[in-house]
Structure formats: C-alpha cells, structure tokens
Image 1 (tube, rainbow, N blue to C red):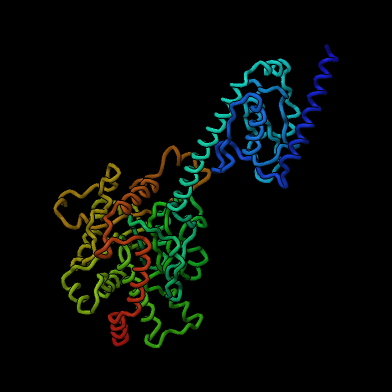
Image 2: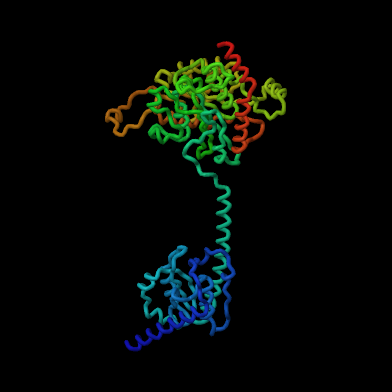
Length: 528
C-alpha cells in the first residue's frame, strides 16, 4: 500500500513538471506583472472567459481562463492541485484562507484549481507548509464535469460584475477628489506685508462656496488681539503660546517695547471662517522702530507720527470694507483716542457699491445704502468689578453715546446678558428693559487662567471666588456669541471666497489711492 502511494506521488510530480514546461513553451512571459485580484481589476478584454460545453476540454479551458485573468504565464509560479478534472469545495476553501493581497512588483504564486477555478495569490512558503489531506484529494475524483462548466461560467460572471464595481469606485473617487477642499494650513499667511503691499499667498486657500464669514480684529498694542483671535480659532488657555494660530506678543517683545504682528495676517479655519489679525493701531513701538533703524517715510508725510496715524486709518478703512464682523479689542475701558480713530475711518471708508463714477459713490453714501460691518467691543483682561450689572451697563451707555451718530452696527444684542447658552453670565440690570444701551455689543474676557499641572488641594476643594464663571465657560460663551452674530453683507451681490479675495485686493488698492485719505494727511500736517 505504501509503495503504491509513493508511485502515485512520483507520477503526479512528474505530470506537474511536464505540465509546467508545456505551459512555458506555449505562453512565455517576458515579465511577471502584479497579480490582479478578482473583482477589483479594471475592465479588460481578457476578463471575459469563454466556456465550453464538451467534457473533454473542460480542464484545458479552465486553465487558460485562469492564465488570462492573472496576466502571466503558467510556469514556476503556478501550482496545479491534482490531475483529476475537479477539486472539491473543501480544498478550494482551504486555499482561499491563504489568500493575500499581491503588492505591485512582487512575485506571488498563482494557484490553479482544475475543474472549479478559484484564483488566489498566496505566499510560496505558506503553500509549501500547507498539507492537503489525502482523503480530500481522493474525493475530488468523484465530481462531475457539469459542475466544472458551471463554475467556469460563474467565474466569468463574477469577473464582469467585479469590473463594473471597480469602475464605479474609481469614478466616485475621482469625483470626491475634485470636490475635496484644499488642505488646511496650520500657519497664518500674509495678506498685507510689513511694507503695506498686497500679497497673493492666500488665494490658494479660497474655495468657490458662498457661505462666507470674515472676522477681523483691531486694537492697540499689547491688548491681546492675536490671543483673542487664536482662542476664537480653536486654541485654549491650556495650549502653549507656540501652538497658537496667531503668535502673541512674547515676553522679550514686551520688555523691549516691540510689536508682534505687522501688516495683516490671515487664517482659514476648518469651519471655513476667515480670520484677519492686524498690526497695532497708532503704535508708539512702530514709530520707535522706524526712528531706531532710520527708516525713511514717503515725502508726502510731514512726520513719523502722521505716517503711523495715516497707516492706522488705512487699515481701519480696509477692515471696515472687507469684514462681516469686526472685534474692537481693548485691555482697559476705554481709550477715547482709539474710538476717535475708528470714527474718522468710518467717514473715510470707500464705498463698496459697484459704481462707475465718483458721483455715484457720493450719491450712494448720501442715501445711506453703503454696507457696514457688525462691530463687537471686547473688554479683555476684565477684573471682578467689571462683571457687576451696574458697571457693565455703564460701559454700554458710554459706547452708545460715542457712536450715537455712527452707521456701524453696534446694537446686535451680542452681550453678556444674552441667554445663548442658558443662563446669562451677567444678570440684566433691573429697569433697563427699554434702554437702547442694553443691546450694545460688548463682551468681557477675564484674565486668562493658565494651566497648572499640580493644583493645590485647597484650590480643588474650595475654589477661589472670582465673581464670574470660569475662563473655559466664558470662552465657550465668547465663541458662541461671535460665530452666531449677524453676518453683515459687504456688497450688493453674494460673494464666494475667491471673489471676496479679489474684492479685498481691489479695496486695498482703492484705500491706498483714496483722495479722502490724502486730504486727511494734509489736514494732519497743517494742524501739527
């Protein structure tokens, strides 16, 4: 019995070698392309397998179809399981368990199961170490030829369906690639450089959709403009300063009386909110830097002081023209000189209406049809006394009197008494229900609480009384109020992000060439 089994194995091995040499002579291959997995290949002419109806040619047709699907010749990379016409489902199931993905450029072994063609790609080492039970090989001789013909037809149908599915998947992937937004840059880009020249570095970040929200911030030096805008962009008080979107003023810059931001920096968040950070207005540090490094000013300016003030007016008029929401930051209430510069910039603001002549601009301004942004005043580094209802309402009254004749939208109900997150952070003062000052846009931000790695035990059990909620609660309230504020239009047409960027470039050129700002400069020179 053992001798007959050995003779049977030698005869099968000899037939396998002869079959391999015959296949190499018939269909030689110069190279071995990567194995294509059934159902994921692109449609090819070789994917359609012809079926035969005669019993004598079933095994040959099945082997040829398998060779056409793999795209390589049947040689050393082919293992023929048995010379019987068919192989049982149990054998094919065990071979399918060894299936792996064939990487491009690697040689894999193709397994040809005669009778019931199942194409797999397996490792040579795994195939050698896998033993097929003898009983399963003996059972394979009892299958019929009709089953092999049906299996060949099923392989052809499965290949065709797989090609259709792969084509749909490729088309869907290409469509998603076209609609995908550009990758978000984690750093800011310069919109206006330190020389007050326009740059096109932010044009690649713009999309074609019209759900536009532009938030800009203005203020004096060191009042926390970059920090507030970074907190609005997603940073928290526990983040290190080096991880902020807009780099705040460093300790060395404060000690040397220097400024951090120059020109206008732009950042686009994942929610497609465009944030604009500006250099400090009427900054003494900027004038000191020009004097220290002996930078010359243009001849049309009489002094460095006038030059700095005119630059501040240019920035303000530009921000009033291209922003939906403007944050006016201050670290103490309140600088009257800053409010006066804002009022001057409002008078000098160019019209954003599309007109063809100066007369149309003047008539538009007289009719009051020009567009103005929503202005929100931010009292940064507020103390405990500022959170009392009496002090808060007094600050609203001062702002209302200063901008009583202004067209800026300062009464939008963005206040600490709003119940946007449930209970208001500051209770409304009784008897002020009918007052207009109650709707003046004013938010208070306390001094930032820095993260402590090891808090004291007494601080965790008995927290310090602040007189106002925690910083994280106020930060959530701050974001919710600003992001839900009314989006004031900038033009009479709806702008996309790309159109807005081109519109901002035109507005900056009109601001630099404005005759009203030039007259304002001459007025400053005469009064000084």
